View 1 (cartoon, rainbow, N blue to C red):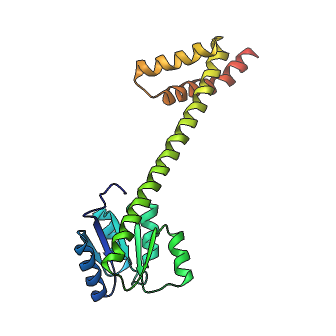
View 2: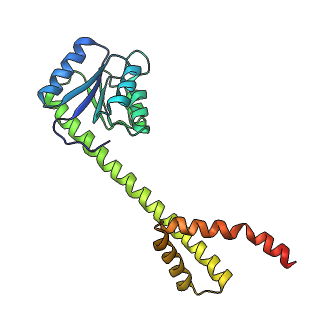
View 3: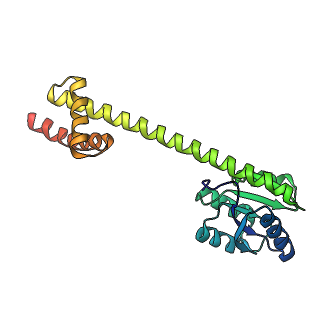
Length: 206
């Protein structure tokens, strides 16, 4: 999701009205994009999106089966493709739902090629930016959790073996290099080894 060029975009097109679908397909192809799948209802749109993995989904709202906004929500939730809504309805309720479903652009019919060009570019660009931000948050969260686990494991080694903190950290790092395992996994193994036996040791001491 979000790794394609802004040219020759692979598009899933979902529109239940045949002439409307043909018009949108013609407009998309005139811009140099490829319609890799067409659907006339929401259920087929979702099925085709999962199988074809398009770069973007251009969706009407009102279709048989699940509507375009629900399709967009699922595509966003499953990180399949960003959604661009093309609808004849400008009701505030639809716009609110489109925002909640993760849609990044909303076009009102009739749509011209010059409308689609910036809409697709903006949708894909925003999608990439959001994907990048989510990845940054994921990496930061993992780094914080690794640090927390290493600190905990280091504290256990200091307590059990009367090591200094830098010695305990070096022990973990050397174990990580020797076993070719991430430092986080080594720390987790130390914690698992020490958390259980404490009760037994206290029991034996008593």
